[in-house]
Length: 287
Image (cartoon, rainbow, N blue to C red; front, side, top):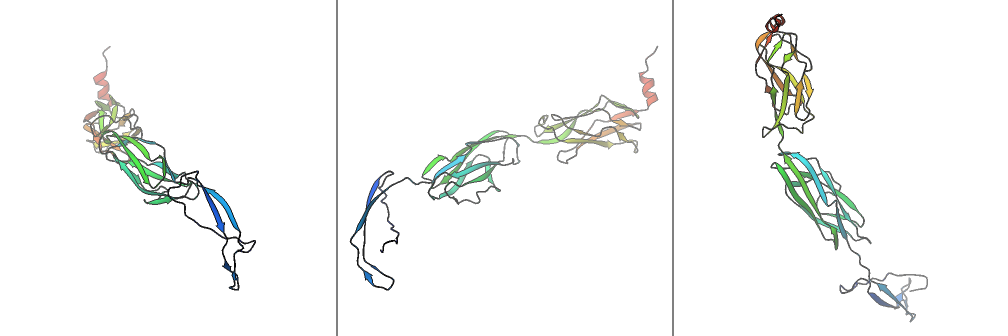
């Protein structure tokens, strides 16, 4: 090879070579053809050198090591949590993720940056994978996610998964119905509505449902229900403190409904609304 030019030498290192092994090389010049096709004999010189074997690997890291989904309604699917899959290797070694396995009521969800399995990651590249929790029974649930790959070294490949299935709210019931009312005045004993779950227990986690109040039965046919007729639930309970009916009659019933339309409605016990003068006569104390 003429002075000032360079060439590329390729060779294969034996599988028996170990990191930090030093391999001696001797490069001997040979004849070559110039640009006119004339054979140029070797100059007779040779070059000696050595190379050191380095450990070039794909390194898998999956983080975090644990995902906690908290409470999720039984029979529904949680919002997603994300894991990160990373190739911490270097020197251009690709990492091939061949599969992702899960145990328990957990599954992969779309929307992460990893894409469909299998996929590859270049050195120092990472991507995200979304995971969801879908409990099929009430109570604590656990499982795991494992990333399978061709990594030469694995820092972490498994994520512990946990969550708890809780019975969902299903209905509204009256915890307290009016005993009676006074036309144009208050309903006595107050009105209290409870949110119950599938087990019939008070759903104390509910602080968002808005309960609306209306007539289930209006014996007068023309009555107006006044006061605050929409109340937000607090710890599963909605209290209506200022309802009023402007007509008299026997057999009034109220209906509690979920403004969002998710929960089934509930009706109160029937009660009477008295005229004001009759109420005053009935409860007037003698001198």
